[in-house]
Image 1 (cartoon, rainbow, N blue to C red):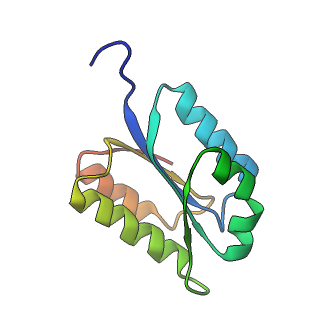
Image 2 (image 1 turned 90 degrees about the horizontal axis):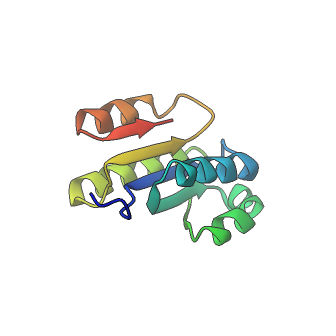
Length: 118
């Protein structure tokens, strides 16, 4: 890798459990570490995504609106696995959430050879 090439990373945000302020800090931290966010997605209810609109628009995040109570986690996991199996998931994956619901996903991604940041 040349000095001008930055490593790709994905950031998958559970917007139902992560405030816009913390999401902004997570994005800034990954950029500070030298990553380029080739995948940036936020999952949540219309209300929580609306509250994070400025941050998500600023960083051109893809927004995935949940389909009712309790579906945000499932949408994030299904999307992550689709990205993995299609070959579109970069070597580093950050999961932004304030709970441990994604521990099985983190283990599975690590088993696939990905570096996982939580």
